[in-house]
Image 1 (cartoon, helix red, strand yellow):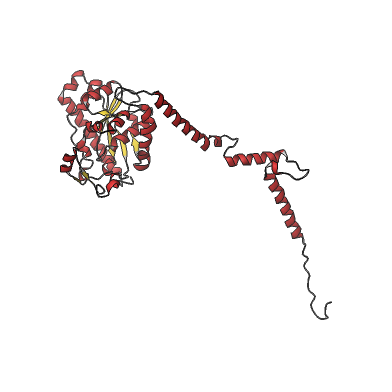
Image 2: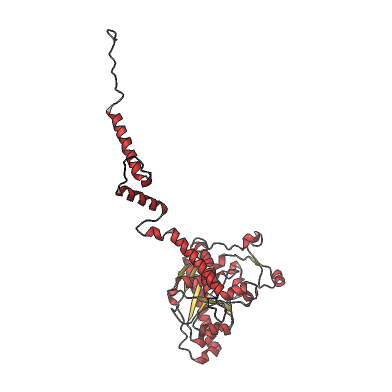
Length: 358
């Protein structure tokens, strides 16, 4: 009972309109939750799932599993994985059944496309980040002789050039490399080189490849280019006696100069231990900042930025048959090719800001 003179307190009711609103919201949320549940869980007595509820639940389950009715998700990860498994199974089947072709040089396109090229593409795209230009100067069909500079201690430049032609040429042609004899004398390496389409760097093999209409590559500097010191980088060495020019003249194949920037920096050679090279029977024994001090890590090439540019072809169709035996003509063409490659190297180097970043 209130006392006289005291202020009267206001009593706030516990069940207001806001409480009834909260209860209504909870009921709405429960109904929405039931609508998202699987139709088999709607077990309230007398309740029955509507067609809209069932369709909504089915769509949600399909989206969660990655299968939508629109189509793109059906071609996603599960189908891609299935395609890869099927490709591996098909590769194994063909190898076991002998369902593949090998040419007279030992080239195995099936093995090259499935094994060698995918491995080289990792270096090409991610490690050396090769940029290719002038690939339109290579013929879409028929023979041509690609002549390139050679450097880098190990012949990564030849392998990267073959990937450049295969991936960037409009018809994805195979580039047949002419390699040194020592490559084919090494166990396992020689067999792998043959299966990848390479053969010995001799005039006879070059002539046979060009006569068969193959896109062939030669590196006239040879070991002189591979084993030169870092201080002499991008200074072309002597191009030999012009045997590659004679092969191109005999087969009327165009000569395509190719300039490669980036290969000189993968193993910066500061010294050559000639005594060790003579004992081991190798052309040179390189000393680099990381080899042999870093052990096996010194074998990993440095990630230099590469550029490969194919120049305009030099036509040989206008020369007569006796030109291949004329030392003056072969020397003139050899010097023209060498000078073209050298000048292109200078231009590429002038546009390059950093040997690792490009």
